[in-house]
Image 1 (cartoon, helix red, strand yellow):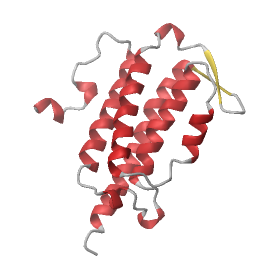
Image 2 (cartoon, one colour):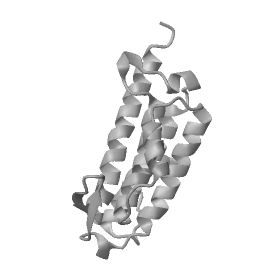
Image 3 (cartoon, rainbow, N blue to C red):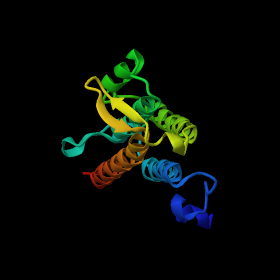
Length: 169
């Protein structure tokens, strides 16, 4: 299992995929591995805890995969559905630990497949984000999928560390 200690981008995987999609795939794989590592020891109450008013780890996980779904919907050239908007509004709501972890794992798996479905020829295609139809491109959205996910992984890890430090106090 020595390969598990090497980050995905250094494992020589996805070499058949262009560099942009490869980087996004590696970022999402790293997110899944980091979350599995850091959330393993958290119970349900700890996963939804908000120490020092930080967003909970559970929120971060729900937000990551629901954001991926929204960003990839925009990359597909679509606007959000009512279901996606409803899920957006419920990201902070308490959810069972196992349900949150399952939603996260499934969301990452679906996002990986969706990222692979894009062609590098599409990267410069214009896209519009949100009700204001802010301008971007398919490539911009794909890169943001990686950036945004990694940002929230870091926040989830930080909150996990705080929660773990508070045990027994």
